[in-house]
Image (cartoon, rainbow, N blue to C red; front, side, top):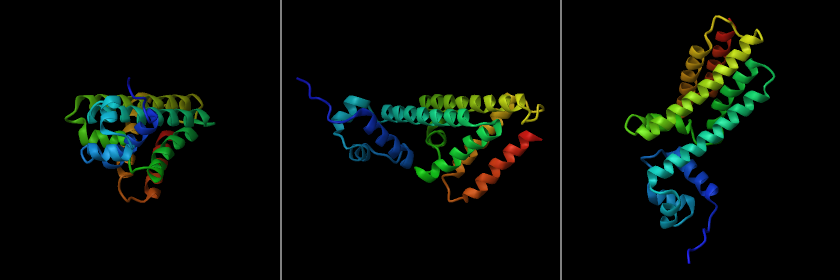
Length: 192
């Protein structure tokens, strides 16, 4: 008879996600994962597969959480400007309450050039954020908040590149006020 699981999958996956986010893929050993997740090595393999498979599942969990938060914040905003500030504000503040930077940006810089699966997941996450920015830009143009001179798709790509920079800079000891100034400049760019 098979033993019943002695752990909740989402709880231990969350622990793995946090460890990968903090240390990166290469610096995280299977021993680190077993210890941090609080499960037996055999249970880890039986439930999640190998380290690479677990990392991909941790990425999916992170992407789902971030996309839900960003979309929720944008929907709760009263104006497109407020939505844009809220999205960027989350990106800036995220590193204050969790491991530094963005797990996806970290994975892109560490692994995407040599790992096709991670590259695809990273690019899908980037595309999702670009779509959110594009919706906010169209909303702002429709309401007269943002200049109609900005092409929404191209401007969304620019904002996404800016957000990657902000999140990469979040891994450093950079003053958060500087990141806020960058956000403010991006908002002013749209309103000209």
